[in-house]
Length: 384
Image (cartoon, rainbow, N blue to C red):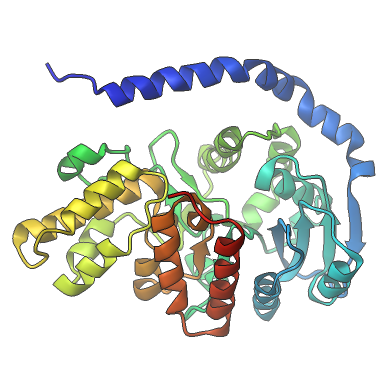
């Protein structure tokens, strides 16, 4: 009989303890937080009209401008405008008079709100503010500034339109069971939307006309239970919205699909497969990162070396999603437009790799992202 690893037992005990400790807050949050917020919302929010008209496509762009409006915020807004989309900025922090003046020429509307409910709290306020407009829109995009937008051969918005589905994300997650690092060679890539936690990542989503005209869409947001706990927001928001779309029979897809990732990376030549493996970003899975470092000691030209590199890449993606793990690959081979920021402060290894990848980007948006990344690391160095 296979032994249950001690580290797993400790993890489960700690998880159970956290759940018990969180129970009083969860009870209040479940029964009262949304009702209390909605009762006070009108006094807590500030809405400003921007200079741009509202068109048939609208993008809610959620920002958390702790250091004020950044150059990358303006880059994203200009890209949205260039695509013929009307930007609605939702800020989870108060904006200064100067920030409002900077944003006004690049927006149709600006909403300042309390920092409650993470990204889905902000999306909810933005969507409910547009309630009367939604049925007339061709598409609604929702994005946030947890990822930089950089130059790409074709914009993400172009890719969304080309997909032609009712609901589209940039990437998806939880389409395969997470795999233990020690068993990485045993993983078989069978990615499926049937996993109960399958979802499209919320940093970039697009909602089409069929959904926007369905009254149940607004009902979902009116009933959405706000939370100041990140895991619950992911469960109710990212997972909840995706599962709602699927239950209602709407078409859906990701612009950067991972369904056939195993076949794609197996087709890489030896040097590029080794480079992809070296440039994996695995900020929150130290056991997988350690196993990856072991794999890199092998000869990439041998059958075993190739196989292990493929397997550890797939294991890393199964643990934390392609959007986090593989920017080196997605930028070079997929023409992807997003680079996640959080690895910069989660781990030193993830920070170094992210900086290396950003430093090599040639365009002005990429170089702006690199400059801001250096500033993030200087102000908030990651733990060793």
